[in-house]
Image (cartoon, rainbow, N blue to C red; front, side, top):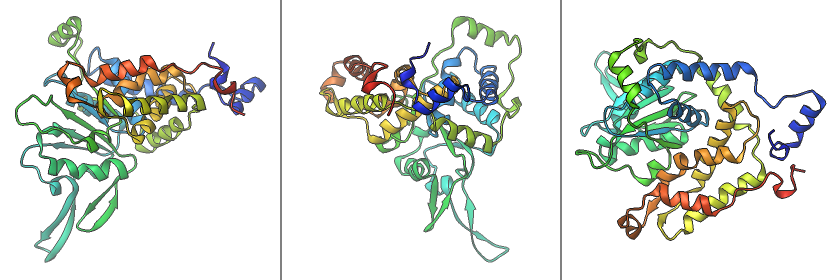
Length: 344
């Protein structure tokens, strides 16, 4: 039984009168499950990572997939792009890539005898930024406006990006040769950073046996159209969050800003993204209200990559995830009856 105080008064009254329900229309849940099931046929044994990726995109954010080569980062991004439908573009980031190769720019049209604007690959619903940390910071910065403002500026003209716009980036660990660290301003624009990890032995054997044959991402059929995904995003952002849970999110964010182990804590954008991720997680489970568990489950994926350790903490072997875990353990989760129960 879900504690009633996490719901808002309107929903609780509708449920009590028989005029409403705690759940979203079944059609939306069926579509989400179908999309994730199809992606899971391509990437075996990684259903939790697939669900987290969908939650981040449903929250209106972008995803950074960071892991060693060969574990399926690019495959996951391509599979998600296929089941979502819409325009898809892939940018292979290399050391010689220029900002104009990403956002577009003016080129000379010999037939017209004039300069014309050529759209870059960012003009799409879903963009795969493959190996984003293999390009210099100058080109990485070309994504900053697109990720936050959903627009691009080229040759003095600002143009909106398609709606929806989602960026899925992959990167290898920074210790690999030929990589450039992403600046903090760009990391802060990724709603989640996720790691796929190696497959379990049984799934790796199944992959090698290829039995049953796994479809390639390009063979997956779209489940929805972009307009349907925009509606789902709006529904997810309307999930009710109790004021006590909002206060809890702010309390954790403030704790990261004053923690002695951290040189840089969570930004207000991080707090906003954490709430949206919790809302999207609740929506994917069919609920119209968020629970503390939704915040707990998404905390590390949303917050850890935005934190910067002090040198002495890093030298001791601590990582950002461990520092965040200590803060989460120290701050109590609000009880169901916090702030007098239901919102008045």
